[in-house]
Image: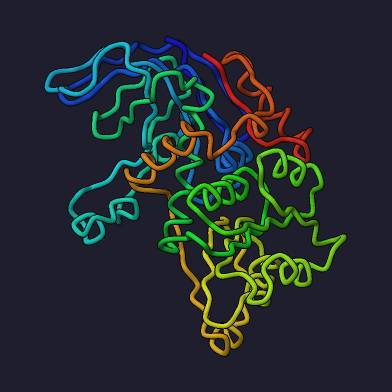
Length: 339
């Protein structure tokens, strides 16, 4: 079978390797669609602190079960599926207390373990999530980033009837904003300096899309959420400027969820965090229930994915997909690899 390996930064080699066989409790997934994530891009350029070459990438993916191994009871050949990419120990404190997504020895398929950038991948049945009838592979591959948004929003508890501000309208910010709306938020404001991303947000039904370089964001938030401002803020960029913005704009006693991945260590006004009695909440990946929530939000149409789908590349052009993203970074949301 064909397999794409990032052998070194900016060098993808497609090679022939033996087709794997599913072991006990495993299924063999024929990979049909892979989404390229921001972390994949960081790794491609050798800038991801936790991904080393060589690596078979691909953690956002969907496909069809080709074969079920021994002791697989609820899945069968022909099922369309996506996969949770977390490999956990099951023994550490977080795992023992139900927080396996922050396992002390967490590995991620496509990041620290062999990923889906190949024609077939054997995975444990417990990681597999069936796709509803009629859900295509593009949407199936986007369950993973929607689940990121679902878990981030879920860190706030119920958002029903609340006003939510999202900083950043890239794929994750967009999806987090849509999830908040889909789970009953009263109103959602998304902020981004890219007019292109803001237009995508509007196409997805996000009611308020603000460019903070052209409009006073504080005034816009007050207008949208008057009289009390935002009940919670989701920081989905991962830079010092936006986390500072979140702290500055936050209402006293409110929550800020840190969703963005920080490449550089930010300076944070902890004095203001203390004075406002803010809660800074971390979020990492997702749990099985977040995948189920993501599937249902997509199935029901409460999360719209089509406006985020930028372009498809055939498997043989894996490296070209990265070059396209680099050349069109300001006008690219989600790029797919087709098998």
